[in-house]
Length: 126
Image (tube, rainbow, N blue to C red; front, top):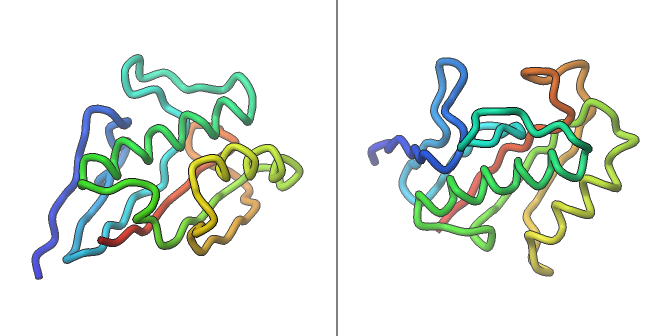
């Protein structure tokens, strides 16, 4: 199997030595996405709901570029600066999945890139 780099202008360009996603066979590994608007390049930091929506839009764009959608997601990892915001993030996050939600863990961290409050990574498969 060969690995394939997945890249779209509809999600933020990487800010370091990594790719938006790597497809390996039928699996897609999406790098952690933060709330950057890919059109303006600006951070979305109005509130945790707005941040989460932008992160999910970025993830959706990458999934789409790979010919997938949220039904293909097998596992997610949510990184939060404040676990006290979990319920608000979970409410937005949950609207993107049906009753067959993926496996997931959520962890509180000491810091995230660019001082954002939420970052989400995914693994998907066809």
